[in-house]
Each structure stands twice: as structure tokens, then as C-alpha cells.
Amino acid sequence: MRLTICIVVLFAAVVGCKPIPEKKSGLEDNRVSIQDEGPTKPEETELFNPIPPKVSIDANGVPDDAIVLFNGKHFDEWTSAVDSTEVKWVLNADGSMTVKDKTGDIQTRRNFENIQLHLEWRSPSKIQGKGQSRANSGVFLQNRYEVQVLDNNDNKTYVNGQVGAIYKQSVPYAMASRPSGEWNTYDIIYHAPEFDDAGVKTKAATITVLHNGVLIQDHFEIQGTTEYIGWPKNEPHGKAPIRLQDHRDNSRVSYRNIWVRELD
Image (tube, rainbow, N blue to C red):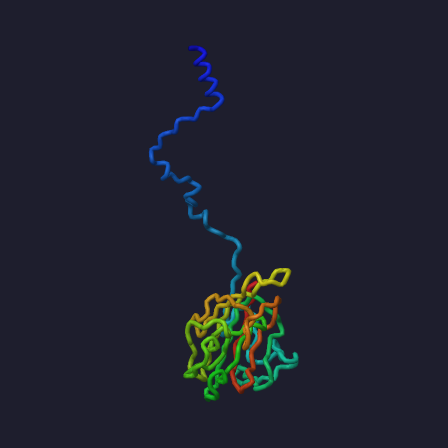
């Protein structure tokens, strides 16, 4: 008998005895720790820093932290995109500028990356041309990515090239133009693409556009350069100018009240 008991005790010591499972009451699955409950006081989720800077808006709607690119008085912030000479577009008495046919695009003297851009544009009240030849211009971000400017009032064209399109890439959600000859606004939020050390794009540029207050492009990922012929290209680049287009077909598009806020 003693030998049998010793063998049983020795076997238990070698193999190990598993404890008898504790009987669950069924409440354990509903238990939540205090940590899982999250904050229990309102002040635990209140932040006091960093304090956003105060921005004032002037009578023309320009924030005081913006860079005014065109105020209707001069072309100091602009240069010819063709040969870096003085701008040859027309400076109008009403504080606007108008494309002078076949003088070439103009671009900012400064280079930009991530921005909020505001500008106003107007097609001529006297209708001239049709399709892509009616009041055609464009706003190029980083000198590469175009938001189309065009008079599409009773004027059909390919929809990825109509007013408000990211040219040949993204059709706008709506056509929100005012009647020909009246002023339109574009408000653009743009974030530049990113490239690694090998020059490979790691993050696409994104763009949001409001046309006369109507959302027409919503955080669209730009595929690359907005080409007239061929597929988008993605060569690495850094900061670059904002460019306004002379379409070279007597478009007579006018611009005014252009300002930009850097988002870096």
C-alpha cells in the first residue's frame, strides 16, 4: 500500500497536477477595466497648447497671414514663364489683369509647396470661340498640375477638360460657373507630392477645389503632371511657382485678388 502511494505521489510530481478550472459566473465577459473605460473627467481630454495663431481678415477677405500675389496695382510678384522678363499681360484700371494673347504664361517669383490659394477669374462677356478655344486658361500648382479655367456656359467640351477639372485627370463634381463676363472664385487646398531619396514618388499630391463656394474637387490624388497628350509623369521635384496660362487663342481671361497661405 505504501509503495503504491509513493508511486502515485512521485508520478504527480513528475507529470504535474493541473488545477481544477475555476467555475465562471458569466460576469467576467462583461467586466471592463477602468483603463478601457477611457477618461472619466472632461478635463482629461482638454488641450490648452499649442495655441493657434489669431488670423484677421481684411475688407477684401484676405487673411493677414497670406502673401498677396496680386492686388491690382502691379506685377511685382510675377514674371514671364517664358523668359523670366517683365510680365506683358494687361493691367486694368479696375484692379484686374487680363491675358495678353501670345505673350506667354506668367508665374510667381516665389516657389511654393503646400498651400491654400484664392483667386478670382472672369471670362469675357463677348462670346468668342467654342470648346477649348473659349476663354481657356489654367492655374498650375508647382508649375505642373493644372486646374482648368474655361467658359463652359452653353459650351460643351470633354468633361475632364472642362472648367474646374484637374486637367485630363479628374472631372469636377459640378459646373458652378457664373454667367459669362461675371467674376468666379477658386479656393484651392493643395498638398505637394513626396519623393524618396531615389526619386520615387511615395505620396501623391492632393487637391481640393471650391468654385464659387461649391465643392468640385475633394482631396483628389493627382496622378502626375497634367499632360495634353500622353500619360502623367512623376519626376521628382521640390517647391515651384504658381503659373497662370496664356492659352494663345485670344482667351482674354482676367484675374484679380490673388493670395496664398503657406501650409507648411
